[in-house]
Image 1 (tube, each protein chain N blue to C red):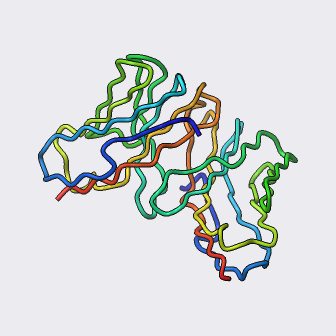
Image 2: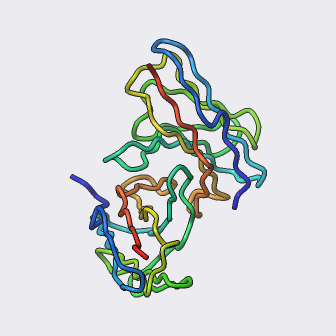
Amino acid sequence: DAGITQSPRHKVTETGTPVTLRCHQTENHRYMYWYRQDPGHGLRLIHYSYGVKDTDKGEVSDGYSVSRSKTEDFLLTLESATSSQTSVYFCATSPGGMNTQYFGPGTRLTVL
Amino acid sequence: EDQVTQSPEALRLQEGESSSLNCSYTVSGLRGLFWYRQDPGKGPEFLFTLYSAGEEKEKERLKATLTKKESFLHITAPKPEDSATYLCAVQAPDFGNEKLTFGTGTRLTIIP
């Protein structure tokens, strides 16, 4: 296991409110990823980071932003949550871009 | 068009009844194919990585194989604790070498 924690584990919020999800790792992995998982779609990449302050978009990045100011922390922000962002969010880390990704326990987000 | 397709969507087996799960992909220049196991309410857990056609890897009752178009996860004499959703993912230049593209998974149920 890569020593990955996510917080909060569950959150219910209202449409239009900002939400920040946190991923923390203790493995000193260079790469960190945010995915969302929805029925019928599988895991889809939102954003990823290849180093401190270095980030790039995934396939479903609209409505999301990320920040990484320290190696161990990767934040995902929904600036104004919408019901379509109700999902389970997973963080993953990897020592290198071509290496195995290890996943955190997930955050279940409900936007009412 | 789906580029990573898993079949069947769901599979129910009696304890001890061996079977195989399929992951087919339509990418060129495969860098790696990954198998994960996911239990309800948890993050995906890494099982195997395969890099080239003909490669096989085993772990307990699971064996993963790879051809140029698909991968199989063979489950021999399964037990109820093997019940989970099994995900495959590919890494290829088509998607960006640093990213994984996932299938939607096969939900496996082993009946005692």
